[in-house]
Length: 295
Image 1 (cartoon, rainbow, N blue to C red):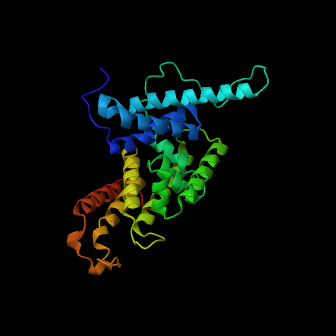
Image 2 (cartoon, rainbow, N blue to C red):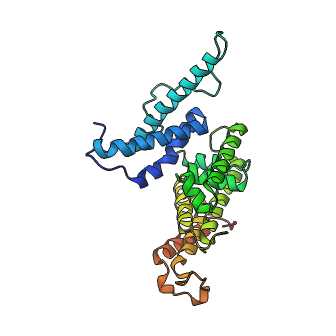
């Protein structure tokens, strides 16, 4: 039996699974843009079908199968269109297209979230493009949500994301987690982008609000995902601790009129004690086994 009893499609579950599904498709087929479209179609299908038919026992595998079918249909249709537009001579299929391997219905066991983060946080992209692409592909935010969060027009954000995707495609970097020193350098880029997202949420660089809680929360969520994948990395733990300890004071940082309250004058009863305790535990554990680093 494939489905459990009828259960609504949880927006939080879909958002959490979206980068894993996108990563699986990009690793298998390439075509970042087309893969993202296919994932969005699969998410929409889940939102329509799961409330009526019940949530699949393996939601991630279901999404990967549906998105893979959408993508292969799209690639084959595009391939056929190109052949029709060319001369009658037989044309070799494009190198980028990779046919589904045997057992297409089986979802890969790996979680490609971290690899997708490496791709989005490439130093080949400008900082603004890295932040936007990370929020879009890994955070699951829409272009409109990212534009609102970063306080830029939606059309400007759409162009920024499109440019970033074109740069990713033009770079032709293999989809995979780098090894050795390159891995350390790219992980540093990932953590830097997540820190920039959090920093923009903690102290907004424009607009009338001092804080953007949605951005800070999203940065913490993404850093938690990296920490879950790399639990023994002290720098990842350090960044997550830094975010938690800093964000724990959010409610006490501003007065009713939005003005900044200095640390010494803050009402400490309004601090998030659970976040403080978690942050202290993380950094205390990291300090016992990891040399001091940026975070």
